[in-house]
Image 1: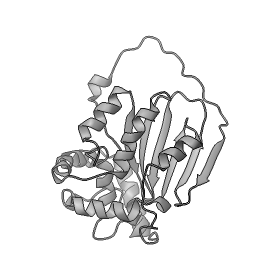
Image 2: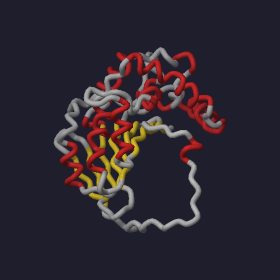
Image 3: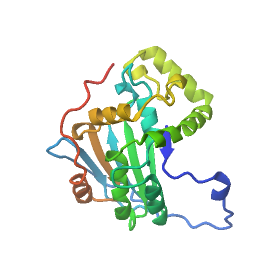
Image 4: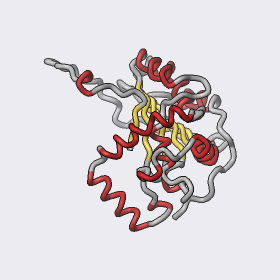
Length: 242
């Protein structure tokens, strides 16, 4: 599942084009460099020539790490990507990213949650502070979470039947842990509060459970960015449920 920090009405996003210019073909075999920092955060970079650079900050914080007390928390966390942080307002994040033509999205599955910034290579640097804010400096204001309820209901209502059936099949196979749904249940919509989200983030958004990955950026660039993350070095949540 995915959530985008900036939502544009579909009809406004449609434009007529008579001609198109082919994008520059990226290097087919870009070398991937990997490094593990002393705090156990994993860095991976493919510094190839691409029209759009991408940087993702991922954590092992998918639905399999939920407990019976917070089922659906990772789904709400995904939908809350791009809300107000300790450094930026939600409007400020969206507005600043729009001005540089960048986009911020949040995706999650049973294993992980990822905050991803896409921008042209010459603008990616300006967007990185907002990626860091969205991924590591959340505050989860109660009134903003309340405003997300209609959005969450809409996302559930528009989920394809195939995705729902697959989710039920996995649940039947594993029951708990890996069987936890990637969708928040109807009875929990609006009930997962700020404290629950903050606790889940504190337990799972740690350096040993994270990875910083980039395409179209250098490993040195990612290393410099990682130094500004200030992630906890504790192992975090307990061992992954089966």
